[in-house]
Length: 92
Image 1 (tube, rainbow, N blue to C red):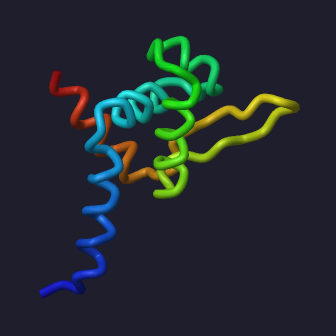
Image 2 (cartoon, helix red, strand yellow):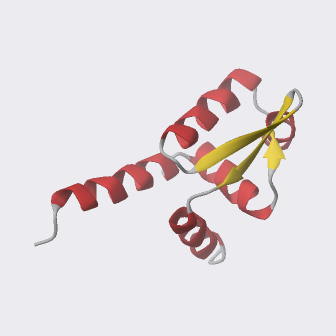
């Protein structure tokens, strides 16, 4: 049997993606890097809600933000998540 820590790590990634808003954010960021204002506009959600969801994704190592002046542009940096979400969303 494999080390259970490896399964926990994968389960944690899946938990982070299991929320519809986070899944939508990740799917959108796979297609185009974006700043928080673009994500807010796309989702039609309050800034506080989007920021909370971005924090979860950042803490799990799924996305990263790059600062350019006063703007932070987010992108998906976890290749495993990128493959998983692309596969999942291409089956719509």
